[in-house]
View 1 (tube, one colour):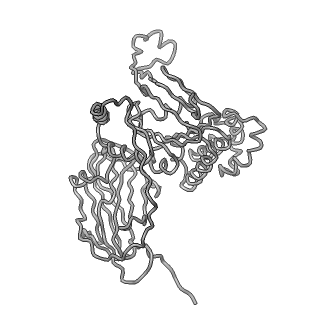
View 2: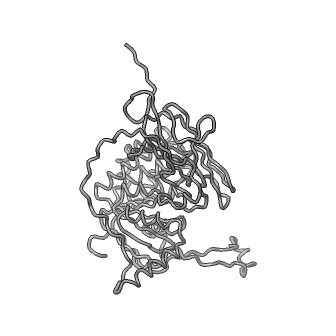
Length: 444
């Protein structure tokens, strides 16, 4: 292993056998052995990467690209058919929710079991028991059988144990997408603290913003290969740009680019973005000019816009802003309702889709954002054509605003995410300061 590295993977090749009709019992295997056909699925193909001590690395890519398998190889849950995996130091994994937990044992008993798997002695676990329980926020539930726990409670317990192991390497696979918002924030703050202590972190997530805040390097994996690597913002920008293209086409384009450059022997790497002098933001200029933009955006116009990404398995075909009379408008008064009508077209039946909106002031200030998952609504099931309607009480103060709309999985995987889909203007009869009007009373 090279000096400074704590993880090294060289020429990793991993495949799985996909059985069409797998025989379970000995009798079935004896009688129907010839029918036990299977095909080989290559998950990782000649992957090589190295991670230094103290680095935080994000793995991104579509579902099934091999990200989770890569984490399992690093944690030694599974082994490759070809290649070598070298890991130095104690590893703590948050890969399978509740892995290593016994359903009939209490949370407290499972802390001892899970901590011992991660390398803690009984004495060390007893010393950390109080802080593990406190962080998990399970309280009196800690002595209940964990089969009675919700998935969020499972996650709290698993995360609380993992971060108290004092591991050299922490592996996380989408674990932060489970649980309520306040606990997710708490976990994220804890991860930043762990990172500051010099722990190496490898995280798989569809939340690119989460990776950009935590990690200093990203790997984009597609079809079992590393497509590119580099600073998170640079890699993510490239990933989103190609998200709606065929992967083979992307790889072909990159190979053609390599052939144009004489003497290139390595995969091209994304350059680190150049550092710029910090800019001092000036207060936004007062701009009350009414916006006369089209409030209905058709499909072709959406396709041309570069501020849009997603797989397009479900495609937003139009977005319209209506008043209480059902009239399309581009200007509203403070206190007036705004009805957002988002029409879509689905290429296939998909369940559990999240619909979301975001409102930004023209200078980029985030005013408000929500989605159906936050509002605890049942996920949308799409067939062909349909529409999503969101009625908003407009308490925004006077100014110009931009609307974002999105259809995505609960994990954050985007079907169609469109920034700044349209502009609208707000007029206020009163002279107030800030972004929104808050209900208030005065008393002398």
